[in-house]
Length: 503
Image (cartoon, rainbow, N blue to C red):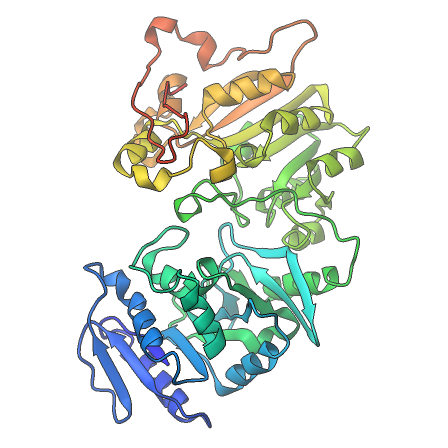
């Protein structure tokens, strides 16, 4: 049992964990990994020292410890100093392990309680979600993957640990990519070592461990009702051979999953502000938790959504949003013959393998009076270019969709995609960086180049015309005033992706 405990702020939680482990019927050795000396009572070993100069590297200290003692224990438990794993949960782990394949490991999900006792689950946030494609049955268990591997703890059998070590991905120097240093150390067995973390959702409560600090309660994650709803949906999908496919893979392979589609976006006021006042019907492509879609439905509009997957859409569906499930081709076929006043494609277009095909399919749901509102990251904005110059290693693979899972987007690129799909841009609106708010309301061009994301408003191209930006920033700025930035390619995969211009 290895507990990572930096400093002294969590010592009261640490003491509780030690009491819990020492009270178990198992023979337990507890080793505390820390940067400072701690007096923890009899039978507790304290190892002091950081694997690197970065204090966040402390969790990596458990790896050589486990390797040194790989033949001495039946179970190896790693956790941060405020994660409570009970004896009953360890016995549940041992029971399900008997039914798992050699490369499968039962994992945990963190739960928290706020001051009123309400339960929430912080590991489900941003782009993290249940993967319906991972559902499987083993004996009496139904299991699935949560795309967030981090739960600040893990348990491995001796055989599983040996398999992780032999993979060559376990004993590594501190690093970070998908997660930060703290989280990476707790997820490497699943990310680098060939093991698949599965949550036994049929016995979900047995694998929900208490994050004693409750630091995210009411701030990050989903509440108990939402988690229960999603787990119930997953259990139904597990026995449904005709279960719909997700819309697409919404996560990227970049550092910290940059430019991924978030499942729990708040109401998008920037989009609502540009919605034509005469709009009566809306088609939303890429609906997650559906805050924006529900806001529109509450105004009396007919809202139809193609959700990210059949799991996350339950709450929006219960509030009057009509759902059309499946990938974009399937959804377009189901919507054939229907048109909408407005189509929303919010933070999605850059994630489709073929954005032109996606726009062409959606154009079939437009009339001559319809508008399409597209929001995308501006990967060639000044703030983004500065980050690429300063942290070039974080953008490894960008420029290759196959490697990164994302297309490079800019006003110029979106304009081209629209033109090729039979759409014409009416205008573009920059959502400026917070440090450039002084540009709000000034020249559209200045707004765009300082905007980390932007909104494009497109209409059907008139027959016989060449699609281009009408009444937009590009139509109002003389070519002599355009700003061009020429630099060397910043991608480390040697992809042909030079930054030619901002627009």
